[in-house]
Length: 479
Image (tube, rainbow, N blue to C red; front, top):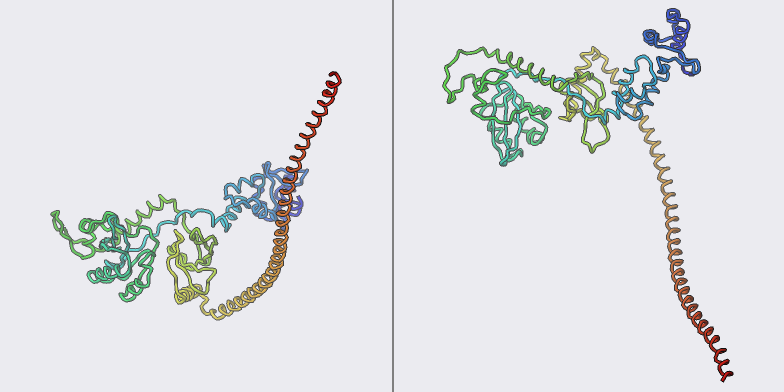
């Protein structure tokens, strides 16, 4: 009630409801024009509760602007989600309440951590390489009879190569890959997942020596390893390019058992066009089935990364490059390294060196037109860093003092506990003595009871004798 009387917008609306004149109050300069117009649109539903001096929309109380966030916080204390939070607020109303509730719930850190993964982003199709064997994919598939199937797949021609290997260790895998490169040439880029042996030092050294770029991508069946047959798969026209993979790779038709008639040569430029159409169709189908939601992440936004369930503490990342494979920086270790993550799955893929970060920042500053002020920006950043460091050191000092005080209190409490333990031991000894005394008293009582019973028997015998003796005396006299 007091907040309503202090809200100039609600006072103007109350005046308009009473006078049925919505034009004059709207001229006031201290009111929220957007809120006033929103209330004017529902003026037929507005009433004034005279007993409480509040404004109502139907049976719902209209909340003043200063209390709107507080009311939403109260309703969202249980972190029940958007729908249930709105249900809790069904007795109150204010303009834009639904948008405010959705914004509050979506920005709640606790809800973000505990809520399952959001909808997938639209499928981002990788561009077709410039030519055959420029970019290949590599992956393993475990065989049922033991061993593994190494599958290499050319992105341009869709040409598959298979090698059976006993294990996926680097000493076994790298020589087989070297053999393939010796036969077909070294590609410019090799894409793999982030599993072994691709994440090991041996493979990184092999990539550096051979001169190809190793790109780690999210594991999502990027290599079609199922049901591949060497001769059939290489000689069958692919649905994307319309040509057999072997024909595209070697630029000549491959002869198989089935007879055919040589056809006229087709323009190689049609392959990228067909690939683009096939990928567009694939993207539309995948986006429609997955109910995708486009990402609105921008540079500088904070995001959460889904981690192992055993790690309960969420970790913020700051977006540096909002592309299909997001480049984000760890807020906790911002001066050490950055991490490249896949936006759809939130899995950590690889670390980026400080030189890459510097190049990215320089490009960003050049694009914003402020590269000339880099010294001034750096100086301001340094000053801010020093101030923050000083604040942190002061907080550390205060924390140390609190720790010392806490340790002293703990020592005193330990002493008290020791005294209490000694007292408990004494009490145990007393209880033990009392128990022994009680057992002795039980024995003494039993002995006394036995003696009493014996005395009662003697008394009973005496009484019987006393009764018999007079009769005997009387008999003697008769005789």
